[in-house]
Image (spheres, one colour):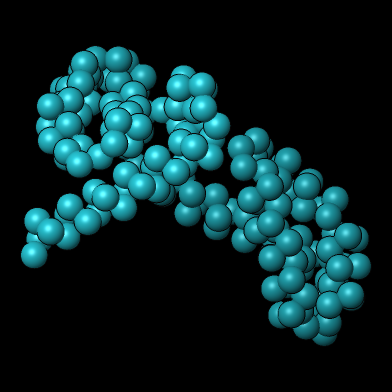
Length: 163
């Protein structure tokens, strides 16, 4: 393996030159990795009787990078990405209340006030544990306890409904 590391350091400028000559400006690291893998495959498959390794490695690496470019281009052509204007025109169906509060509160029966606060802050306001702690002026670990207790009680309620 030490021999290949030496080989890869020696041919690293060649791989960068191939990437540059193919005008690759996106995902250079991925193509460089493809080039290194190509170098390894070329070293494994090289037959010294057929010519110089440098020429063989150059052709092999460039071929592997071109194959990868073709795969990526086909994938990109098959994928549809709506333009930014599309997303501006899409309306959120429940923009005001992501989860209706009354529906959510029906699940909070049997929870303490603090556990209910955690459920509302998490499901309606989409706040993190840290944000809830700041808003309620309590420690993060306190909010984590609310969360743990609320989850446990909600899970028990769910099991009762299923049985």
